[in-house]
Image (cartoon, rainbow, N blue to C red):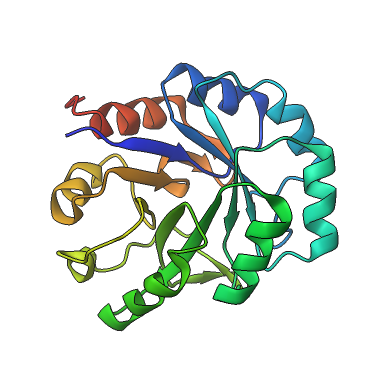
Amino acid sequence: MECLVKICGITSEKDLKAAQDLGANFVGFVLEEKSKRYINLKRLKSLSMIIRKPLKSVALVVDPSDDFLEMLLMSSKVDYIQLHGEESPQRVEQIAKKTKIPLIKAIGVEKETDLHSVRSYENSVDYILLDSKSKESGNLKGGRGISFNWNIIKGFNFNKPWFLAGGLNTNNVIDAMRTTGAKMLDVSTGVETKPGKKSFDKMRKFIGRANGEFI
């Protein structure tokens, strides 16, 4: 079984280059000030300039204003925008029209009924991302390395490709793929030595295991 891997919360050139060299498919940059992995637009611009294809860049934002989205589009060219707040389906549609950039919508999952909201967003986004509902520093989902009950999504029929996020690490990645059937994985805390600092060895193991190498 092979999965695409997104390494989220990249803050340094060193970690970006390592993710690139190790074969990550996406890298995520957190533009939310409440996060321990926050980078500003200036930093995003300098980091995004060293990304080489086929690696894709993802800007993670939380309930962004139109002004902020405009500044983001003017300062950097990103491949995807990840909406990680409480954006309504209507707001997501507006953002899709305004930015004309492919969108990823994060949805917090705790119980089966949380999956109902997936349907509301599928028409206006390119990817769905399922994360644990645990909140970090007020209103940012995720980032604490906590998983949700993967059995909740067994057999759920998605109409769009989706990422599995929340508490993934080198030890549980194989089990996560087997249990959920996920083809795309999003990892941040699980490949870090401390918030915002990635471990080359953990990234190597995680990407290797996601690609079916039992290392």
